[in-house]
Length: 241
Image 1 (cartoon, rainbow, N blue to C red):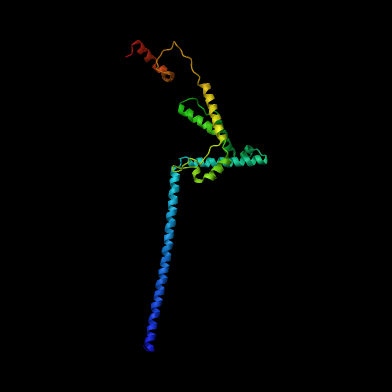
Image 2 (image 1 turned 60 degrees about the vertical axis):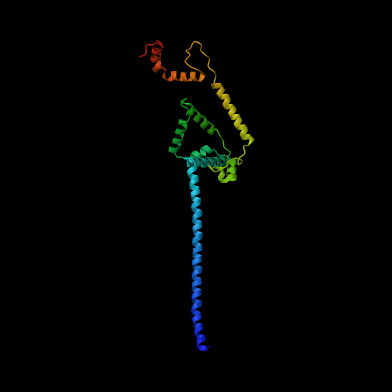
């Protein structure tokens, strides 16, 4: 091979090498871009799954969850402000009223007056149970320090959901159990005072089959007796049409 042919073959090799380098570089850029798109897709998938889980949790919460959460936060802030005022030797109620305008203060006072006697009397057992529950809840004085410790310890399981197993996560303290027992004993003692046995009247008409039926008939008589008395007398005389 002469010198001319050697130079020609060398010149042909250089474009081929340059083309291969460009192809390799472009392939590397495409693979890099493909990897970035793959990572973004995985990140979007994880973020989407996280949002779906959070939305599912929100849908399973009670309807008034946000209101209850705001109320709990307000109670915590109010307790913190009260403790701070007591530490400074200030009257918290007076300090709080200084930051409320006259219209709001009047509304609060009117609301308190309306709640002075909220019990309208006995209507049915369901309403009586609701009033009893609200009264017991109102008398509960929560320990916010223990509340925050339990919330930090349990994490997401603190509020719970249908998939949370609460067994073994919480242990009732002896003081809380004793407090519950004392409260139940007070309720039993209070019920015994009002659930006294009525004396039996031997001269009264027997229109019942047991004590429960007798009480039911007494209620009917109390509410509808004046409207059915004439019909009842006609049935007894045999003159009813």
